Image (cartoon, rainbow, N blue to C red; front, side, top):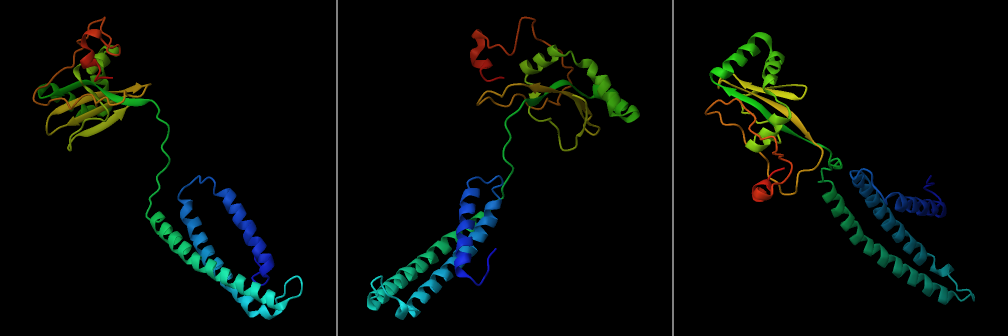
Length: 260
């Protein structure tokens, strides 16, 4: 702890504190802590500047007591004056250090630090199971009003043919990174299914979460756009048994290269 009275003890304390800071500041777990450290260092630079000035003053005011090892007072006084000049120069240089640290602190204070990015994990995309509108959608909207959204999801889940539906969605482009919704659409999720519906426009849609265990290929575009609402459709798988979407075809490499 500083004594505020004994310069020898406090100088040793300051030296040890700076040594500890040099060791501790090798790694910042939270970069936001740098702002507080800069503030303390700025105060430290200001105090160090004052200490150097006071050391210079101590040398010049006590030069009559200065002697060299041979007892020569004139030589000692000259050394005292030389030390004073160097200390004053060092103090003046610290003015520039203070200005630079102050500018760095001002810039650091404008930073909004965000959490560190996490390692990429499995991706989840949304596969369209069925999209209905008009009279086809009216039946489901009635179920929603009468029995609730869970009953509607259970009803529409009957259109899900599992892997066939997934492959058909990839082939036809009905796969989305985010759930496609309009500004007036209602959305509800139960398990892997998400239901979107709109009474005013008369349409309903059921999507299924499709987890992916590998990252999307670099540069691959987002697959799929929102299904057209100009006509209703019941999504029917149209994939032949031997067609595997995830295996590139030699005959259509240009097309398959843009997909997952």
